[in-house]
Image 1: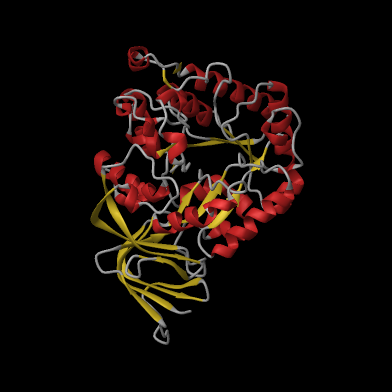
Image 2: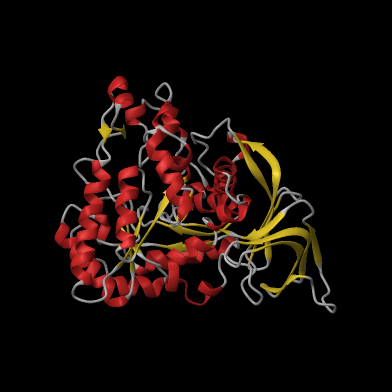
Length: 439
């Protein structure tokens, strides 16, 4: 279908484009940027007056709860939440039930996701069988099935030798290893260590749980680099100022490392736990203000590569429990764009810079694993895929359970106002969400 998105403010953070104009789409591709060709005939026109027209968001941390919860139609609900939030591509970790450690499971997930005709789904394969940290998975077969990298999700690797061999194997084939920096023995608490944890009588997770793991990862990477090209590592959800300092140092010395931060850690602190509010029971836990501020600065200066929703839909039964017993996690897909816009406003940053952290910068993390999509995903490029988000930057909306399409309605942002209301989301040139149509 030929679609004309007319009269919007075109923003493409990757190229620096920020100007009024039109976007012409044809056959799932971007035909023209700025002005439609004279012979272009639109079968559908989207009025983008007062709106920003940008690449669709790319979210590197989204739990879809499938395979495992097909009976609850989880995939359908989370895909609807994604496009309602302007997210056109999601990366999902392997800690499903069953774990994504077999090619057949990966192929089934991709097939079911493609049938939804909504966001693109890029699975991460399990680094070790059943995430037990003992035996490496068949990474080549999982890659052929569609995996874009390999991860332990939130399960730390106890054995440094297994991690060393995993990095060696991944380096041989050019795969990226996605690691959550967490020491298994220090990371068993439910809140960040500090005065609040002591006052509330809750077990704490010290920043050292993150930094010790980072030291181990970086030392193994250095050892491999001395023997040849080393493995590329993506660090998932940094949470501490000390962790940021170590990543900054590793990047300065040329280690092939990237990292992300969640919307929760970027905006909130442990004080937002309030009176044992289980909606703020998160993993990683919310830390002190100095950590949040360091994360904000690191995202702004490029030390942190991407902002992620860390979407993890948790049902009422698992959340409405005493704080320490509640399941960690929060919904975030529909909040990612609003948090990015709010961060830009609060930090005094150009809107395009903030949008870059949820578009082309996550694509750079994925790199060659995307194949032919790498050149145009997260960008507005003539001839590139027509994954587009249209949103009103001046419109504000209040986060409420009723406003969320996800199966998970629990988030520490409930009751807060966020800027940026999505008006339309297109994936592959097809309208996957339209606020005007209510779908």
